[in-house]
Length: 198
DNA sequence: TCATTAAAGTTAT
DNA sequence: ATAACTTTAATGA
Image: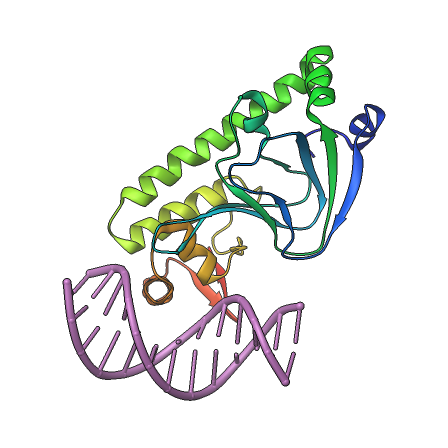
């Protein structure tokens, strides 16, 4: 949880219930609210000129969405779409800003959040620029596992479908599937009823 | 080597 | 039931 629910509610946050496949915000919208997920999964994406989905991230329980755009005058660079039914805390931008100005600890927490987002982006740029598909997927799995508590081999169940892995790394699904199988043969991952363990 | 296309099987809603 | 996901195979850049 980035910011405690009771604190957000004490400064005016409202909880909003959403169905799956609902829009939280769209590319080019003006950011007006701080969003934090209580429950559910939300993706950040774009579509490239050929119409292929570019998946930026999938966020869930306790995570904030698009907060970096609240510090700028522009618009959102991505869409935020729910992937399941969700409960989201929504706080007006001005109230969010006041909260940060009055609470250095919370402000630092948001700094930390944006920093980890930036770190992830650096990792992703390297992945996007790598040609070898095994290297791409291994680098992504390394990152995903590095932010987990459990570090034992094959204890990490990758929380993405092959389609999602493809859209995150810029590979096509088929290549992703073949590469995951090669990685299984080479003992880099295990596959247990279609779930990838790393 | 990887992407694309097509076709079919499987899982989730 | 229907859509979304997974898989295999053939072909092309």
